[in-house]
Length: 277
Image 1: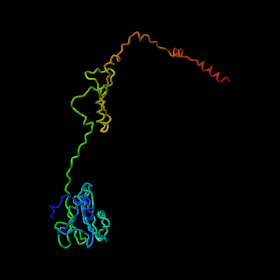
Image 2: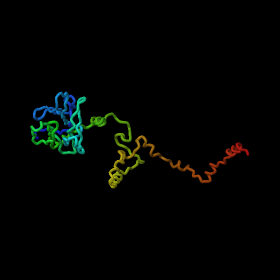
Image 3: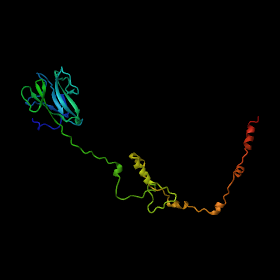
Protein backbone atom coordinates (compact mmCIF):
# COMPACT_ATOMS: atom_id res chain seq x y z
CA UNK A 1 0.00 0.00 0.00
CA UNK A 2 1.36 3.44 -0.91
CA UNK A 3 1.24 6.57 1.21
CA UNK A 4 -1.49 8.02 -0.98
CA UNK A 5 -3.67 4.97 -0.36
CA UNK A 6 -3.33 5.24 3.42
CA UNK A 7 -6.16 6.71 5.43
CA UNK A 8 -5.80 10.38 6.30
CA UNK A 9 -7.47 9.77 9.67
CA UNK A 10 -4.89 9.07 12.38
CA UNK A 11 -4.92 6.06 14.67
CA UNK A 12 -6.10 7.04 18.14
CA UNK A 13 -5.62 3.77 20.06
CA UNK A 14 -3.98 0.33 19.72
CA UNK A 15 -4.91 -2.80 21.69
CA UNK A 16 -4.89 -6.59 21.86
CA UNK A 17 -8.10 -8.62 21.32
CA UNK A 18 -8.80 -12.36 21.33
CA UNK A 19 -11.20 -12.17 18.38
CA UNK A 20 -13.91 -10.01 16.83
CA UNK A 21 -16.22 -10.74 19.76
CA UNK A 22 -13.87 -9.33 22.40
CA UNK A 23 -12.71 -6.50 20.14
CA UNK A 24 -14.40 -3.18 21.10
CA UNK A 25 -16.93 -1.83 18.63
CA UNK A 26 -14.87 1.24 17.69
CA UNK A 27 -11.76 -0.87 16.96
CA UNK A 28 -10.73 -2.65 13.75
CA UNK A 29 -9.16 -6.10 14.11
CA UNK A 30 -6.04 -6.95 12.05
CA UNK A 31 -6.83 -10.61 11.32
CA UNK A 32 -4.70 -10.97 8.19
CA UNK A 33 -1.12 -10.12 7.25
CA UNK A 34 -0.09 -8.35 4.05
CA UNK A 35 1.11 -11.77 2.83
CA UNK A 36 -2.39 -13.20 3.09
CA UNK A 37 -1.80 -15.32 6.18
CA UNK A 38 -3.46 -15.34 9.58
CA UNK A 39 -2.42 -12.52 11.92
CA UNK A 40 -2.96 -14.58 15.09
CA UNK A 41 -0.02 -14.00 17.42
CA UNK A 42 -0.66 -17.29 19.26
CA UNK A 43 1.61 -20.00 17.93
CA UNK A 44 1.18 -23.71 18.61
CA UNK A 45 -1.27 -26.60 18.30
CA UNK A 46 -4.40 -27.09 20.36
CA UNK A 47 -4.87 -23.41 21.20
CA UNK A 48 -8.54 -22.54 21.53
CA UNK A 49 -8.00 -18.75 21.61
CA UNK A 50 -5.45 -16.35 20.23
CA UNK A 51 -4.78 -12.65 20.24
CA UNK A 52 -4.69 -10.06 17.47
CA UNK A 53 -3.72 -6.45 17.11
CA UNK A 54 -6.56 -3.95 16.72
CA UNK A 55 -6.70 -0.18 16.39
CA UNK A 56 -9.20 2.66 16.53
CA UNK A 57 -9.63 5.93 14.63
CA UNK A 58 -12.22 7.39 16.99
CA UNK A 59 -11.31 11.06 17.52
CA UNK A 60 -14.04 11.78 20.06
CA UNK A 61 -11.49 11.62 22.88
CA UNK A 62 -9.26 14.26 21.27
CA UNK A 63 -6.14 12.03 21.41
CA UNK A 64 -3.93 10.44 18.70
CA UNK A 65 -1.12 7.90 18.63
CA UNK A 66 2.07 9.83 17.93
CA UNK A 67 4.44 6.86 18.00
CA UNK A 68 4.55 3.04 18.37
CA UNK A 69 7.44 0.95 19.70
CA UNK A 70 8.20 -2.77 20.04
CA UNK A 71 10.40 -3.39 23.09
CA UNK A 72 11.66 -6.50 24.86
CA UNK A 73 10.80 -7.47 28.41
CA UNK A 74 14.30 -6.39 29.53
CA UNK A 75 13.93 -2.84 28.22
CA UNK A 76 12.49 -0.01 30.27
CA UNK A 77 9.44 1.60 28.77
CA UNK A 78 10.34 5.13 27.57
CA UNK A 79 8.96 8.17 29.29
CA UNK A 80 5.57 9.21 27.91
CA UNK A 81 4.75 5.75 26.55
CA UNK A 82 2.32 3.11 27.83
CA UNK A 83 1.62 -0.53 27.10
CA UNK A 84 -1.39 -1.13 24.91
CA UNK A 85 -4.51 -2.49 26.69
CA UNK A 86 -5.79 -6.06 26.37
CA UNK A 87 -9.34 -7.11 25.51
CA UNK A 88 -8.96 -10.86 25.89
CA UNK A 89 -11.24 -13.75 26.67
CA UNK A 90 -11.28 -15.43 30.07
CA UNK A 91 -7.99 -17.18 30.93
CA UNK A 92 -6.37 -15.93 27.70
CA UNK A 93 -2.94 -14.28 27.85
CA UNK A 94 -0.30 -12.82 25.57
CA UNK A 95 3.44 -13.32 25.36
CA UNK A 96 5.58 -10.99 27.47
CA UNK A 97 8.98 -11.42 25.78
CA UNK A 98 8.21 -8.51 23.49
CA UNK A 99 5.55 -5.90 24.03
CA UNK A 100 4.05 -3.00 22.10
CA UNK A 101 3.86 0.45 23.67
CA UNK A 102 2.45 3.69 22.29
CA UNK A 103 2.71 7.40 22.95
CA UNK A 104 -0.74 9.02 23.02
CA UNK A 105 -0.95 12.82 22.91
CA UNK A 106 -3.65 15.49 22.36
CA UNK A 107 -4.49 15.89 18.69
CA UNK A 108 -3.61 19.60 18.68
CA UNK A 109 -0.13 19.14 20.18
CA UNK A 110 1.50 17.35 17.20
CA UNK A 111 1.62 17.78 13.44
CA UNK A 112 2.37 14.11 12.59
CA UNK A 113 0.83 10.88 13.88
CA UNK A 114 0.54 7.17 13.10
CA UNK A 115 -1.83 6.64 10.14
CA UNK A 116 -1.52 2.88 9.51
CA UNK A 117 -0.42 -0.37 11.20
CA UNK A 118 0.46 -3.44 9.09
CA UNK A 119 1.78 -6.95 9.74
CA UNK A 120 3.90 -9.21 7.54
CA UNK A 121 5.40 -12.63 8.00
CA UNK A 122 9.03 -12.40 9.09
CA UNK A 123 11.65 -12.40 6.26
CA UNK A 124 9.04 -12.50 3.48
CA UNK A 125 7.68 -9.05 2.62
CA UNK A 126 9.00 -5.48 2.79
CA UNK A 127 6.55 -2.60 2.90
CA UNK A 128 7.81 0.46 1.05
CA UNK A 129 7.60 3.82 2.85
CA UNK A 130 6.56 2.09 6.11
CA UNK A 131 8.73 2.04 9.23
CA UNK A 132 9.71 -1.37 10.62
CA UNK A 133 9.05 -1.45 14.37
CA UNK A 134 10.43 -4.97 15.02
CA UNK A 135 9.34 -8.57 15.05
CA UNK A 136 7.04 -10.43 17.44
CA UNK A 137 6.15 -14.14 17.39
CA UNK A 138 7.17 -14.50 13.74
CA UNK A 139 5.46 -11.30 12.56
CA UNK A 140 6.99 -7.96 11.63
CA UNK A 141 5.11 -4.86 12.79
CA UNK A 142 5.08 -1.85 10.42
CA UNK A 143 3.70 1.65 10.88
CA UNK A 144 3.14 4.59 8.58
CA UNK A 145 3.32 8.15 9.87
CA UNK A 146 1.95 11.19 8.14
CA UNK A 147 0.95 14.80 8.53
CA UNK A 148 -2.31 15.39 10.32
CA UNK A 149 -4.96 17.07 8.21
CA UNK A 150 -6.59 20.01 10.00
CA UNK A 151 -10.05 19.19 11.34
CA UNK A 152 -12.98 20.60 9.42
CA UNK A 153 -14.51 23.47 11.41
CA UNK A 154 -18.11 22.86 12.34
CA UNK A 155 -20.56 25.67 12.89
CA UNK A 156 -22.02 25.64 16.38
CA UNK A 157 -25.80 26.05 16.53
CA UNK A 158 -26.89 29.31 18.03
CA UNK A 159 -29.16 29.18 21.02
CA UNK A 160 -31.98 31.71 20.84
CA UNK A 161 -33.49 32.49 24.21
CA UNK A 162 -37.23 32.68 24.79
CA UNK A 163 -36.98 36.44 25.31
CA UNK A 164 -35.44 36.89 21.88
CA UNK A 165 -38.05 34.66 20.26
CA UNK A 166 -40.84 36.75 21.78
CA UNK A 167 -39.61 39.90 20.06
CA UNK A 168 -41.72 40.95 17.07
CA UNK A 169 -42.17 43.96 14.81
CA UNK A 170 -45.83 43.31 14.12
CA UNK A 171 -47.82 45.92 16.04
CA UNK A 172 -47.17 47.40 19.45
CA UNK A 173 -49.79 45.32 21.32
CA UNK A 174 -52.27 46.59 23.93
CA UNK A 175 -51.54 49.84 25.80
CA UNK A 176 -49.26 49.43 28.76
CA UNK A 177 -49.92 50.81 32.26
CA UNK A 178 -48.40 54.15 33.13
CA UNK A 179 -44.84 53.79 34.37
CA UNK A 180 -41.84 56.15 34.58
CA UNK A 181 -40.42 54.35 31.53
CA UNK A 182 -43.77 54.60 29.68
CA UNK A 183 -44.86 58.29 29.73
CA UNK A 184 -48.30 59.26 28.33
CA UNK A 185 -48.47 59.92 24.60
CA UNK A 186 -48.89 63.43 23.21
CA UNK A 187 -47.41 66.71 24.36
CA UNK A 188 -46.00 66.69 27.86
CA UNK A 189 -46.18 69.76 30.13
CA UNK A 190 -43.09 70.00 32.22
CA UNK A 191 -43.32 71.25 35.79
CA UNK A 192 -41.43 74.28 36.94
CA UNK A 193 -39.95 72.11 39.67
CA UNK A 194 -38.42 69.58 37.30
CA UNK A 195 -34.87 68.47 37.83
CA UNK A 196 -32.43 69.19 35.01
CA UNK A 197 -30.00 66.36 34.45
CA UNK A 198 -26.75 67.42 32.86
CA UNK A 199 -26.28 64.42 30.62
CA UNK A 200 -23.57 66.01 28.53
CA UNK A 201 -21.39 66.64 31.58
CA UNK A 202 -21.86 63.06 32.73
CA UNK A 203 -20.74 61.67 29.38
CA UNK A 204 -17.78 64.05 29.26
CA UNK A 205 -16.71 62.87 32.71
CA UNK A 206 -16.82 59.25 31.61
CA UNK A 207 -14.79 59.93 28.46
CA UNK A 208 -12.22 62.08 30.29
CA UNK A 209 -11.67 59.43 32.96
CA UNK A 210 -10.25 57.02 30.39
CA UNK A 211 -11.92 54.11 32.16
CA UNK A 212 -14.69 52.61 30.08
CA UNK A 213 -15.90 50.55 33.04
CA UNK A 214 -17.62 53.73 34.36
CA UNK A 215 -20.15 53.46 31.55
CA UNK A 216 -21.77 50.64 33.49
CA UNK A 217 -22.90 53.27 36.05
CA UNK A 218 -25.13 55.00 33.48
CA UNK A 219 -28.69 53.75 33.58
CA UNK A 220 -31.52 53.94 31.08
CA UNK A 221 -33.15 56.79 33.10
CA UNK A 222 -30.12 59.11 32.76
CA UNK A 223 -31.00 62.16 30.66
CA UNK A 224 -34.77 61.73 31.05
CA UNK A 225 -36.25 64.96 32.56
CA UNK A 226 -38.50 64.64 35.58
CA UNK A 227 -42.07 65.89 35.18
CA UNK A 228 -45.38 65.59 37.05
CA UNK A 229 -48.52 64.21 35.55
CA UNK A 230 -50.77 66.95 34.09
CA UNK A 231 -53.53 66.32 36.66
CA UNK A 232 -51.16 67.45 39.43
CA UNK A 233 -50.15 70.67 37.65
CA UNK A 234 -52.93 72.70 39.39
CA UNK A 235 -51.38 72.02 42.80
CA UNK A 236 -47.88 73.19 41.93
CA UNK A 237 -48.67 76.95 41.75
CA UNK A 238 -51.22 77.94 44.46
CA UNK A 239 -52.26 81.60 44.84
CA UNK A 240 -51.22 83.05 48.22
CA UNK A 241 -53.14 86.17 49.27
CA UNK A 242 -51.48 89.17 50.88
CA UNK A 243 -54.03 89.22 53.73
CA UNK A 244 -52.93 85.76 54.79
CA UNK A 245 -49.36 86.92 55.06
CA UNK A 246 -50.35 90.01 57.13
CA UNK A 247 -51.97 87.82 59.84
CA UNK A 248 -48.69 86.14 60.67
CA UNK A 249 -47.49 87.19 64.15
CA UNK A 250 -43.80 87.11 64.88
CA UNK A 251 -43.20 85.97 68.49
CA UNK A 252 -40.26 86.92 70.60
CA UNK A 253 -38.25 84.55 72.76
CA UNK A 254 -40.04 85.78 75.91
CA UNK A 255 -43.45 85.19 74.28
CA UNK A 256 -42.50 81.62 73.47
CA UNK A 257 -41.20 81.06 77.03
CA UNK A 258 -44.43 82.42 78.58
CA UNK A 259 -46.66 80.39 76.25
CA UNK A 260 -44.94 77.10 76.80
CA UNK A 261 -43.90 77.59 80.47
CA UNK A 262 -44.49 74.42 82.55
CA UNK A 263 -43.66 74.11 86.26
CA UNK A 264 -43.86 70.29 86.61
CA UNK A 265 -46.00 70.67 89.76
CA UNK A 266 -47.96 67.49 89.14
CA UNK A 267 -44.79 65.43 88.68
CA UNK A 268 -43.25 66.82 91.88
CA UNK A 269 -46.41 66.04 93.89
CA UNK A 270 -46.48 62.49 92.58
CA UNK A 271 -42.83 61.99 93.42
CA UNK A 272 -43.43 63.17 97.04
CA UNK A 273 -46.28 60.70 97.48
CA UNK A 274 -44.21 57.83 96.31
CA UNK A 275 -41.27 58.79 98.52
CA UNK A 276 -42.60 60.80 101.50
CA UNK A 277 -39.31 60.64 103.46
